[in-house]
Amino acid sequence: MSNWPFRFIHAGNFHLEQPIYGLAEVPDHLRETFLAAHFRAAQRVFDAALAEEVDFVVLSGDLVQSQRSSPRSLVFLVRQFERLAEREIAVYWAGGSVDPPRAWPAAMALPENVHTFPVGRAADFLHSRDEKPLARLVGRSREDQENIGSYQLRADVGGLFTIAIVSGSADESELTGSSVDYWALGGRQNRSTLCTSPVVAHWPGSPQGRSPRETGPHGATLVQVDESRRVRSSLLPTDEVRWHHERIEVDASTHGEQIERMLRERIEAIRDGTRDVDRLIRWTIAGDGPLMAQLRHGTLAADLLDWLHVEYGTEPPVLWTISLETEAAAALPHDWYEQESILGDYLRTIREHQTDEELPLSLEAYLSERHLAGTLAGAVELSGAVTRQRVLRQAALLGVDLLSGDNGMNDSGADAPKGVAS
Ligand SMILES: [Mn+2]
Image 1 (cartoon, protein in one colour):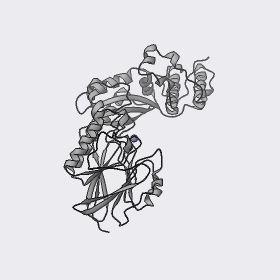
Image 2 (cartoon, protein in one colour):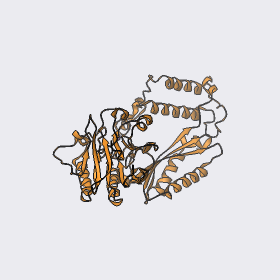
Image 3 (cartoon, helix red, strand yellow):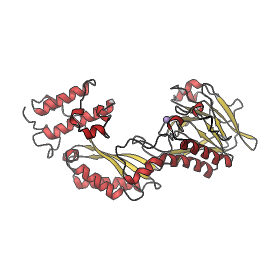
Image 4 (spheres, helix red, strand yellow):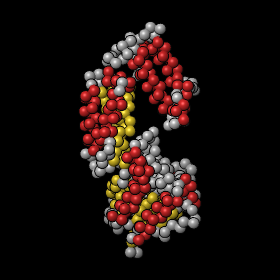
């Protein structure tokens, strides 16, 4: 069946109730950006809808959790919808896990161009331009953790291009088996595409990455459907600030000046990449050798951090280093664990805590009152197996560096350390 070409924007996961999080400290000059970035990014989604003159906007949920949000967020959304209404651009919004239609306050009427989907059953809308049907939009607002495959959303019976709007997890086999043309999926912070042929199934992610894990560009997806129903989609970046996780490998021959040059080259490549957008960079230095020992307990890591902040962190576009961490190259040699030495005892104790997750770490005794009351409160329990294992691995390395006879600072790391006899 032939088709009228049309275009729409697919976006979601604004989470207006949740500003950027996940950093222990925010420098003064970035405070305002951190508080406003997710609003600015969401606004750019609507700016793009107007600039691209799309036929409609598809929102796949998690726009705002109204109970946890100030009225400002709700007023903001209504204002954006009104901007589209002025240009007769329709909005199709299926709720995700935080924004079922019943959560929206009844006192705040949504403009008439906004169409929402119910919970518990599918609904559908026919979208027309100048009386010509363009597309069928089917959808359901999310319930708990249901798999989308169970929703059984049906495509248009007359063969019109059909867009399904739903939030949750999905299996490719379940979606390609239906006759829906484009699955507008929601519920994920990061952008990803499940499949592109014969049907498209896509999560646009959030317009703004909000935590260090949400790396890479964030935005909305512009979808263009041509006469032969071919789908072409592209990212419209909307993020105000972008997260990076950069990994740098060093070896036994890497020295201090080289690491500085490696950081410089990498950060300048990021800066010279795309449009002006502030960056938040987490560095992981991996490998072995004396430089790693210096980074772990000398002043080198702090010196590099200061240098990166001064050199790249203040003038726009800001490239702000949020952390510089080291990572062990591989597991420690087996015979180190067998040594009759303080180091051997220490490593065996660490290993017990690594294998038995129930063994408490009891770190409270080692922290000052100031830390317990401040940013580390709650963190001392090291909730989460991943954090626990990371801390234990770092503790093992610290032990190797400090308890090896030569203090680890001059050791290539390749030979068995000269343990202090116990
Ligand atoms: Mn979400």
